[in-house]
Each structure stands twice: as structure tokens, then as C-alpha cells.
Amino acid sequence: MRIALFGRTGQVATEVQRRAPDGVTVRAIGREEADFTDPDSVQRAAQQVEAHAVVNAAAYTAVDRAEAEERRQRY
Ligand SMILES: NC(=O)c1ccc[n+]([C@@H]2O[C@H](COP(=O)([O-])OP(=O)(O)OC[C@H]3O[C@@H](n4cnc5c(N)ncnc54)[C@H](OP(=O)(O)O)[C@@H]3O)[C@@H](O)[C@H]2O)c1
Image (cartoon, rainbow, N blue to C red; front, side, top):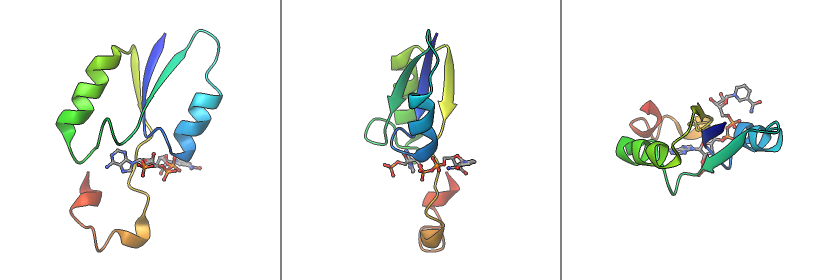
């Protein structure tokens, strides 16, 4: 089974990669390949992996910047 995992550098994605059971291939995808403010890049990346499942661990977690970046954190 192959999983496409977004948010490669984050805490959750790091643990998902570390704990993937035998038989599960995790293809971790970072912002440089798929930026959630650019939905087309996300679709392209997901299609390239040809995954059986997609896990999204990408998130706007910079809450201290949320007011200054109101548009960006809507994604
Ligand atoms: N950590 C926990 O204990 C925990 C517990 C329960 C639920 N959650 C939830 O799990 C999710 C992930 O949390 P986390 O702690 O792993 O967060 P995190 O460590 O801050 O990681 C967030 C990830 O999202 C990526 N990202 C941010 N904006 C992006 C964008 N526009 N396009 C693509 N990637 C983007 C970051 O990439 P860059 O490295 O490029 O910035 C980073 O890889 C959140 O929804 C959080 O609420 C976390």
C-alpha cells in the first residue's frame, strides 16, 4: 500500500513516516512540491504518487502570524 503524505517536515508527518508499518510505503511531500495555497500543485503531486490513500498533515500552524496573513491561513 502506498500513501501520499502532505506536510513532510511537520511533527505529525514526521511521526507518520517513522511509524509506518511494514507493507506501507509513505511518499512524503513537502511544500516545495505541493503548496496548499496553490491547489493545482497539490493535485499534481497527489496524482504523481498514484497513492492508495492520501494523508494531509500540512496545516497553517503559525497562529501568531494568522492575523497578519489572513488570506494565507484560509487554505
Ligand atoms: N502536533 C500534534 O501533537 C498534533 C495533535 C493533534 C492534531 N494535530 C494537527 O495535525 C496537523 C499538523 O500539525 P503539526 O503539529 O504536524 O504541524 P507542524 O509541525 O507545524 O507542520 C505543519 C506542516 O504543514 C506544512 N505547511 C504549512 N503551510 C503549508 C502550505 N501552504 N503548503 C504546504 N505545506 C504547508 C509545513 O511545511 P513547512 O515546513 O514548509 O512550513 C509543515 O510541514 C494540524 O492540523 C494540527 O492541528 C497536531
